[in-house]
Amino acid sequence: MVMKVYSPEFKADAVALFHSDPDLTIAQTARDLGLNAETLRNWIRADRARGGMSTTRKSMTSTTRAGEATTEELQAEIEALRAELKAARKENATLATERDILRKATKFFASGDDLVSRCQFIEDHCETYPVKRLCQVLDVIRSSFYKWRVGREARAAREREDALLAEKIHAIHAESDRTYGSPRVTAELRDAEGMEINEKKVARIMRKFAIVGVHLRRRVRTTVPEPSGTPVPDLFGRDFTATEPGVKYMGDITYLPIGDGEFLYLATVLDCFSRRVVGWSIADHMRTELVTDALRDAAATRGSLDGAIFHSDHGAQYTSKELANFCEELGVTQSMGAVGTSADNAACESFHASLKRETLQGARRWDGAAACRLSVFRWLTRYNTRRRHSRNRQLSPVAYEHEHFQQSTNMTVAA
Image 1 (tube, rainbow, N blue to C red):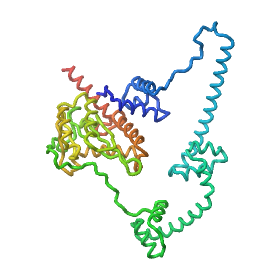
Image 2: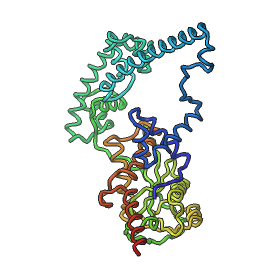
Image 3: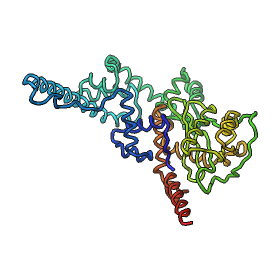
Image 4: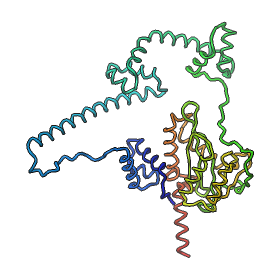
């Protein structure tokens, strides 16, 4: 059944999702989240009320009877409306200018958004728009732009020097079968070319001209065994199926790369019957409370987890005494696969891989925590309510469960 009790966090995320895209309607957002449109509308109204936002429009009619309004009062009201209209037109013109600037800047910043790119964009468009307006829209201090403009010749000279150095680095890199990184390239430049150069400069040139040596990616470890954990049997035996909802659940933690080398962490609880995400939690840590929050969300979604089996890997969060006590309170029986065997929790691994593949779409990380959270929230809710699943005969998890409940009801009635 679709969740009827929603946490404050879910409501806040739903409202944020609606406001994130001006083209989204309440009906579209509600359909993506599996909500009633009126329910989402009430949440939006409540959010506006809490923020002091008023959606009521000023009445254009007087509170007194028309016959009692004097000519001076009517004239004053007309003047006030004219002033309001003039201000609105001015604001619309300003917004239209900003929209045009940002629309042109979109393609310009496709390869990256930094101060140099912004200043170059201002330089290229200062004949069309005032410099002051361009700096305001692109969040650039005017003095910084003019300072950048004065240093144009020096920058051009540095660009020529960088290009000459890049040619030498390209040759060394190609000779090493494209395996050398900045330390070895620096050593080669010093020995073979007799250059006095530091590694930082070589690394900067290699980044600038996309010269990359062979290196191993740092693996983010999310499964850290807890030696003192209580042994838990494997009740799944790699069977990730169920005959009905609410019987068998599986969970795991995955990392979500954000910013510059930072991460958020996502804990999920999936129903083995429909692969529905019945609970999840996102945080900037991997403490046990990340998992308990996800299980608490699952219990709220299902109404109860009493009598269910919950399967996981041997991460410290899942083998902790804190989680064992919490599962006992919920009436949940824990199950764990073999240590160091990803196949024993393969369904969750596959789910998390799909999530990151479809949300990042080739990117290496999200711009920040807020963008990451909103993107994952949108994907998880759409996954449950709209994304077709091959294992569910191309039905979404919620639709698959609904079909199961209807068939069960019909069979009960027929009996």
